Image (cartoon, rainbow, N blue to C red; front, side):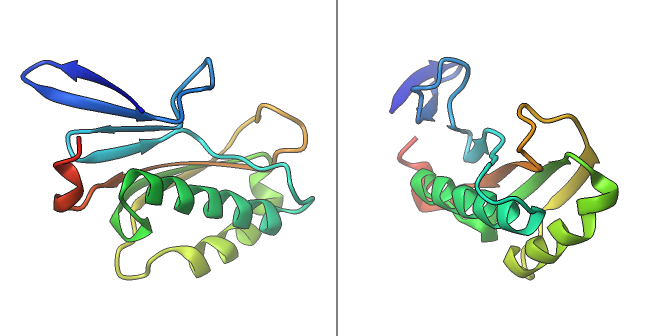
Length: 133
């Protein structure tokens, strides 16, 4: 964990910082920010989406939050015409129906040819977890 002071005594908590480009998790002001998650395991949209959402759940748990506390989700699909419905079928089964985040879904060129989906989320920390910041 890497922490750093910001302004009026607020702390930024960074987790999983080994990647030279970014932290996987940043917590600040009671909000958890995750980097975009991908998986090249699986050759179809459903299997990749399931794997990505499992990674998101694990990262949220590590930060002290969970999917019921999501605020936003940004989804990039390699081929929105082909994969939108398949991704949504997995998303709809996964998302907490009583606590759905705002969401955007767009088509975009992803970093590697095998990747079909990338998802980035933000979530709020429970009040008890905020004291750890």
